Image (tube, rainbow over all chains, first blue to last red; front, side, top):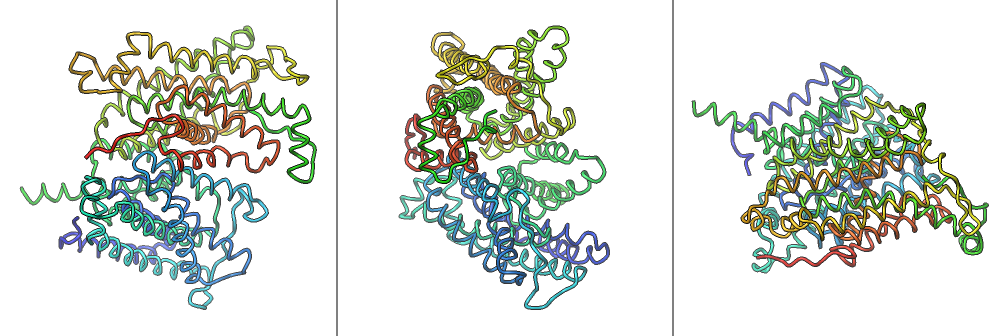
Length: 317
Length: 319
């Protein structure tokens, strides 16, 4: 677990400043940066589970749970407050995480992945088919909420959302880093290396995995609320399996050894998608697929690992 | 595939059930389920076989299905002016081409480099292939629906218990599925190559020690599995319009079937495909909005009770 080295701390500071300043210079970047940070928050949850060696191919269900909290609120209760969305969205995702988690933590590896996939596809089909409740495939509009009771114009709102998201992302990164370094975080890694020996210590592996699972579900909910508010819509696609795959993709792209990897991966993912779909007429999936293969084959520790390796090489010479 | 046809609008479920039981709808639903199950079986058994031998869940399996379907449709439309009967070999050629070329390339160029690496990397490399193939599919065939129903129209309808149905769907598809089932059984249990594949599945190290080329076994297995997926797509192409999302839908469905059956279980996959295909067909007539829910609910229910799947063997914990 790195994250304590001064070089990384400086880079972190630089990234935070960049995320906060660039959108002021280029206003069209504001929403893009929010998406990068929000998805990074979701990916933090994936990274937690990957510490235990478990891949969830259904984490989009928690993302969708957060997003649809904002959607339902807008449809049935009228325009709400962003803070309320975030709190309720996180609670909803946490409860869903606990319910699903109680089942799935009994399984490992491919069965863990499959069951998560099945649960998320159940949610996806419900969101798509319960047309009278959820507007089906059209999705639910998320009107621009107030923030702490204050109403903002669209121009100002995007900055308020940006800085709030940035603050949440920083807090989540530190919290996750602390969590991974805590005894629970270490036991989570022990599930990957040798679960039986962990249990010989008198620790319930299922309980440890459940804690990690619920935390990661809560992070998924927060990210879902933020993305739905930024894009002003929540659609069933948010729960589809390809969305879950995208999150795992971003985790591997950034590197799973470090919480910062989530945001590095998310930034590259969203920027490639943004520029490739604008410049190269719908070939962003192709490009991202090739990038992913290159990362897996040549830089299995992700972008953060690549960056560290280069620094190490430079320090030696 | 099926769907589209619905029972007369009746208010509640019990009266719908009564109508279903007493009428030709029952036969209709069963036939829908049978033809659908045949296609789902072909795709799922390929996925299951690949997992059984390579221990890799092939996320790109649905893309191989879609490519098989699209290439089959393209070839069919190409040969129809010469003779409509040439569309049948066209379906077969399309699935072989996709299975051998695409399947072979995926295994040789990508999968062979990540064996023994972390499971998530193996999963993700096939996810990358899925993204690339999904994109290529849109580039090559566009996003407009493609129809190539020639093979379906050539064969006459048959009457089964008073219900007229295309013989392509109720005879050809199930027969191909049964042939594939028995062909696979025979291949794995009666031929040398099959025994070699089973040996590698059982214990790769020991198999390699007695001179078996595990690399070759992986390649052959992947090609067989990919060909089965493409064959499922090719055979499905006359029965449905080809649309961009068809592969993404099929992959999760075949996951569900393969996992419910127990990964690596060939006969189990056949039974499960039939059960899920039937359940889905009946739900379409009873509560069409829950059609897509059925396979996943069955999968969740089964895996909660039997984590190794209906027909899977329990794995021992190793210290």
